Amino acid sequence: SISLIILKIEILRKRLRFRFPTEKSHRNKYDIKMMKISAILILMILNPSYAVLEDSIEVPKYGGCLNETAYDEDPTTGYHCHFSGRSCMNGEKYLSPMKAEAKGLPKCTCDEDYNNNVYVNKCYSMNTHQVTCIPTDETCPEMDIGPRSNSGLVVPESCGHGSAAYGAFEPPSCGKRCTCNFKYQSRAYQVMAGTTMYGMCYNTGSHQAYCAATKSSCDSSEMYVESSNAMASECPCTDVQVGACISNKMKFAFCAVSADSCGKKDTFLKPLELANSEHDHNCRLCEDTWNCADSTDFTRNDKSCFDMSNEKKSRKKFCKFEDVKTACPVMCGDCCADDMSLMFTYNCAGLKLRDDKKDICESDEKVSSVCARTCGRCCTDDATYKFKDENGKKRNCEYVASRKPNSIRKICRSNNRVRRYCPNTCDNCKMS
Image (cartoon, rainbow, N blue to C red):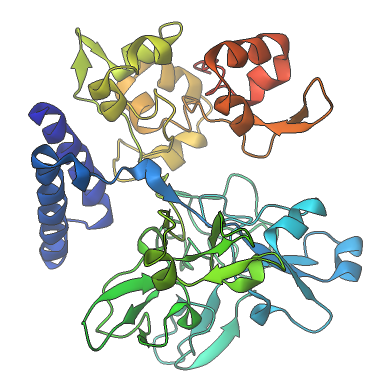
């Protein structure tokens, strides 16, 4: 309905105001982006085939460089996440995502997990004394510090989107690396996801361009425009198109940045090749899971998202309605994050440090909505959790979710650990 489209535009407008602060110098970018979003959503009314849902976005699996001897001595220094084997040093070998998982190595990401983010290159300017982060195969204009600077410093689990940066030279450290999703932050500036910028692949004939993770992502008919070039628009990881691994049976396997991520019998398709193939998959370097919040203005039958989330079986009861699912993504388990664009007398990062955090979350509906993760309102399945079914086969939450409703209920009721680690699938969400 038109009212639902308007609601979607309003929610996206609030999210974009964070990406493009509306001081005068940023308004043009903000207005242009909003015009595009509004046009697309209005077209959805006229022709539903134009609709591209956020759920359709898929992200790559990442591997890394392993020095087995060093890893045996100290797991924090022997394995590093990278896009390809080009970043490996002497004594290291690149492991594909599948091989890394088989060895029980940490899962490499380009999401909000700061510790396991894939490394990109770090540069330093002697003139401005500024650190900049660039894609791994671009060249630093002055001093090349390398991709793993500060990789040896211990980073606490609390470090992430919204944290204050600290510890450039000694542990503990936060925000002082160059990674796929997080750029280096000077002094005690706020650590923010989606801040590392990438280059573009540009076709000089058709004048078409798209954001790319590396130079090697471009087709032979395209030129690479570096991330620092004035021709390149801002390209955060959410906008970067990547390729995919295709099995020897010509079936889509998973999204990937380089051929090094694929199996021996797989074929790697670059972004343009994937777009022109029969495989209908929208592969991006990362998915925005940090600009996520329940609407503080929306109500259904005089109940806000917060009110509904406090009721038993809230997802089953309310999320079947499209307007609720759109306005209350946290409650419905579609995503969960702290909204760092909004401030009270402190922000969500400051709330984490308060002893009275729980009391504030329970008493202030607005704080609970804005700081959903800090207030324990997230209801997402643990992607790393695995269990054995009655036949001894290893399964995960995704497997449980793929079953028929009766089967899901049976698995969830019979296994307390599944219910605990797959709360979204098992409809076991609780305020904490």
